[in-house]
Figure 1 (cartoon, chains in turn blue, yellow):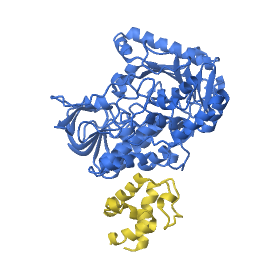
Figure 2 (cartoon, chains in turn orange, blue):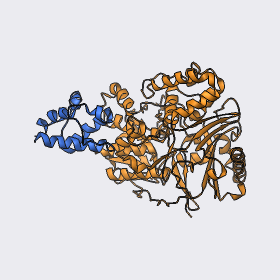
Figure 3 (tube, rainbow over the protein chains, first blue to last red):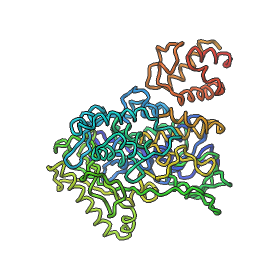
Figure 4 (cartoon, chains in turn brown, blue):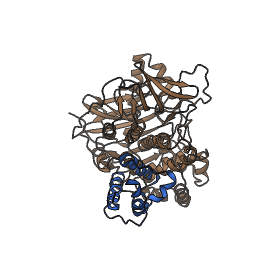
Amino acid sequence: MGLFKEDLKITPPMGRHFDPVDTSYDAIIIGAGMSGMAAAIRLAMYDKKVLLLERHSISGGLNSYYNRRKRGLDVGLHALTNFAEKGERRKPLTKLLKQLRIPYDKLELTSQFESQVSFPEVTLRFNNDIELLKSEIATQFPDQVGNFLRLLEHILNFNEVALDNKLVMAKDVVDSFISNHLLREMIFCPLLIYGSAWENDMDFSQFVIMFKSIYLEGFGRSRGGVRRVLELLRERIEEVGAEVCYRNGVKEILTHGNQSVGVITDRGQEVMASLILSCAGYPETLNLINDQNDTKKIKPRTGKLSFTETIFTLPEKPASLGLNQTIIFHNDAQTYSYQRPQGFYDKRSAVICLPNNFIDDDYQEGVYRLTMMANYELWKKLSQDKVAYNEKKTEVLQDSLMILKKYMPALKSEEISFQDIFTPTTVEHYTGHFGGCVYGSPDKSRDGTTPFKGLFLCGTDQGFLGIVGSMLSGISMANLHGFMNPSLTTDSSTNITTSSL
Amino acid sequence: MEAVEVRKFVLDIIEDIALDEDVSNLNDDIALREQLDLDSMDFLDIVMELKKRHKVEVPQEDYPRLATMSGCVEYLTPKMQ
């Protein structure tokens, strides 16, 4: 029995061959994450000869899927953020589909029912219409309504994607509007855990990106989940003729002075290109440069935020157990602690994702996912001892069930038909991200530049967030560094990338 | 090349770029941006499609001449002879 009613065929990734056909390309893309795939499509659309190198056997990077016991399961994103209806103008989702020439209907997108932020004794519900959140705040925090509306206006008027925005801490800005500590913490909770590479705060531009994508546009899901999105990207890559090699990543980036000139693949082949775009992450990309003289002046830090994720299935769907929410942001204190925990994981807070609870539910059974913040170093050390590692994973499952039972007392854990637990080392293993970090380095490069000419970043360390953000990042960086006149990029980059969002 | 053919070429390009929009009732004298959801990145695509499909180069200083359909036709017709 498959997980989906309409069993999605698991298409083998195209271009199964391991080695690049040629030794020279216009552009090499490191990593078939969503941003790398989007960049490959854009560049190949306008006749660039593109090579995409992926170390793993499937695409998706941080947002991918796997198959276990005939079930196809999503990993990474809980939902697609930046939901938009067909034809909605000037929305990030609409823009990215247009740039990649993917018709909206092919996404088979469906919207969430309703989500919530749950702190002790206070719950704020929200959906893809901001009016619900406004009315929730009016009920729960009547003295803050005016403040919230002023914050909202400030957010709507803010150009969050200008590449020259100064760094401002979001909590400082929000505190100048919202005077209630609990409300501030509740507003921040989903925004931090769905995208911040920093602990406990974020850059205000990032805050606005997240606020719009979650509270103003909202959550959606493609029929078939993340693999639908990846299928569409793979189809386009094939149509535009970019070359993809799986199970063959980049071992080394070749440089000449401060110019990148090509790469050596994992399998030892030297391939040259004047343009290299990497979605491997900032520290991970610089680490590929064999720099004898250590001329790298910039040393981006490894992110500290990683997670455990518990996935399990039950014959019963959450709605029949009394739970209609799509995503629940759970926190059991007045303050939300978003930081690397002291212990293996932090059970004081969690994100519960119920992928059945979108308007169109194509699952055959109930699927339950629960994410908690975790400490990479501790898990890494423990993973040397298989028995202890597995015992700790069982502990994660037990605590996940405890949290879920608060919302779903009718849950019978003995009926669990499938379960799996990811840890920070799982993330590290499959994505190659140092420290198993999910939102990349706290040091971003907004315009994608690195200390090396010809080498640019796209994806999470360029700084756009979510899967829509990641694809837009690939598009923007491909446009900016692949097509714009290099002499113009400093002046026009702001305009081009700004208007891309 | 006839103006009517040039218009058809431009319309084909716009139709492919604004793929979820109806382009059949465009007013040739009103800015394309006002009628369709096109931004500067999409205009860059129009320019790149013109180069790819019809080998016509449009220098950046001439981009404003592509603002309306009639502007496109007027500007491109002599270039596409």
